[in-house]
Image (tube, rainbow, N blue to C red; front, side, top):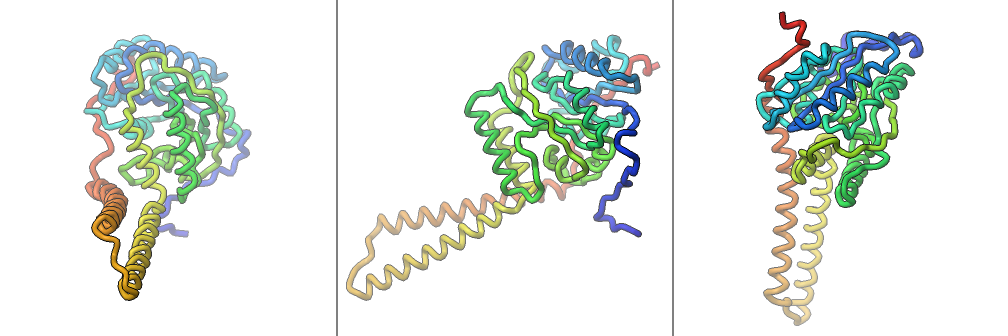
Length: 334
């Protein structure tokens, strides 16, 4: 059977899941201004790889997302210590999701273990993720049982995940971030998706396959502070919302229709009042109605504008990121 270009196709592995061979592992880490924690990060990741009961062509892949501090220099200093360290340096800060995309594109392992560089994602959990993979899962993701952030930030995260799960066309797990392990099959399917506006945890759910959750208690940052500003978090939330549902457009339509019916109802009231000898209530009422209707119009235009803006970004077809430099294991440089 010939599949059209619009279809993605993969070969189903008919082997027993228990007979999966021991995989080579790529630990992929996006980094932005994480210089103080680099040494400890690599130490813990290397220790997690050493805990695996088999040896293999495991690699540590660090993507420096245009850091303004000494993150890249710190990584380069570590190359003689870690023979399996690979480094990508992006030409500027493209954002966390772009750095994750670069990591997936460059990873060579049979499985890719995605963690953040602040050590809130514990590398020591790698064997638990591998166990689920060996049982047949192609996507193993962490769900956060507890977060060390402030109450308002935890509430904002909880609201985002539940709202997205409620309206999304794709079932997206609640409280599941980017901390995950992906099989080569899942990685290749995600890489094949053409969109430029990347929301990895949504794309991960969209490809389907067998997915398993592991509840994880998130840790405190090892050093530094969060690089996500409030606006960054809002932008990420909107990216997930607008990429996986058109519900906001439908809500805008409903709001517009409700406003029209309310206006018609008020018009009938004014007409009847006038014919029965009454008079309109005056300037204050008219001004208030005008403000309400203008606000509704701007709200609907704003929702439409969000979708148009994303269409504009997609049709430009600019690359998601630009690689400025790449370093493999020091022994391979010749």
